[in-house]
Structures are given as C-alpha cells and as structure tokens.
Length: 142
Image 1 (spheres, rainbow, N blue to C red):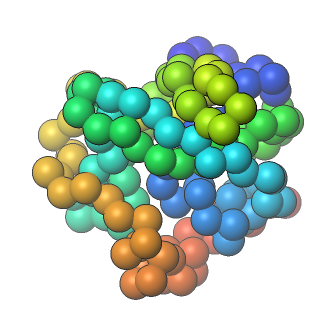
Image 2 (tube, rainbow, N blue to C red; image 1 turned 90 degrees about the vertical axis):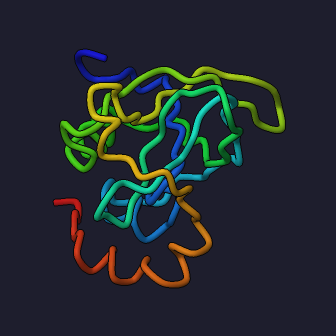
C-alpha cells in the first residue's frame, strides 16, 4: 500500500500491538480494541525474533484486535514501528457486529523465508517475553 492510510481505516493487530503496553508506547494511547478474526492466514514466529508475521495461506483463522478511529499521526507512528519489513494490506476482519475491511501489516511473499514454521502464541509471548520486548523497543511518542 502506498501513502498513508486514511484515518477512517481500522487496524487489525495480531501480534505485539495487541498488548496495551506496546500500542501505548507506539501511538501514545491505548485505543479501544474490538476482538476480531481474519480467515485464511497464518501467524508465524519470525526467525530469531519475539514477534510474529502474518501471511495469507488459506489455512487458519487468526484472532486479534480491531482498532478503529486512529489518527493520521498515529498511522505514521505505527508504520515507523513496523518499518519496511511489512506491507500494509487490506484484510477482511470478522467481529461481533459483522465484517469489515481493515489494514494489517503482513509479511510480503518476497520475505516469507524469514518465517519459521512455528505458530506465534500471544499467551506465551505475554507470559515470557512481553516485558523484555517492551524494554527493548521503547518507541515512546514525542
């Protein structure tokens, strides 16, 4: 996706951005997150890292959070945090009130070699890696 996303677009967060400490450190607040699921994707551990990548492959349903009403400046901070590693792409997210189009940071097919074959587990990350990850990634807002 080129350019900055519209503030009207929602973010589907499936990895570290689901955790209040991380999203707050990136955008300076904790937006209200709505539980959501995307179908036909896999959330895999990135080799040598603590965070995941999301790829389309038609195999699994991946739960996450849908953040709506993000400001343009917040999208800029999110894109800086996710950097050039990911591609911002549209996904179809299902939540309690229906289905919506959202944006998610996906691993492009040209970088799939960085993915392990191991599913990323948010509960395991929270228990054993979240505090270390947060300390190593101080992306505090100005």
